[in-house]
Length: 154
Image: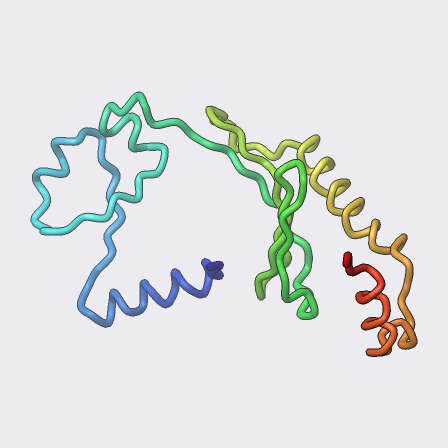
């Protein structure tokens, strides 16, 4: 199942507030500050900051990188390709990805990765141009039946 985070997360936040919830952004320097909160439920949204806050040295980042194309309403499918490339549409753009770097802390854009992702997608979709085009005569029911029948082993 795919969701559109800008739509889904906004709906969740709206429902949370309608139900009486409140959002506070607080910077914690030490885990003991959490114990002083009056709230019975806390959502941990610290991300990679949890490593320092909870002294969790096993927490390891995994870097991904997206290239976002302009929205295209006619793209209503997703693709999964070789070399970990993928594409999926959203209303705010078409997302192209293909990076999964375990242990990478950098938040900067890797231009070589962007070029690889764009080149890989161009090759994938460009390969469809080389496919022979079928005409309506190729889809006559009798012809399909005859072709299938001749392939049967007796």
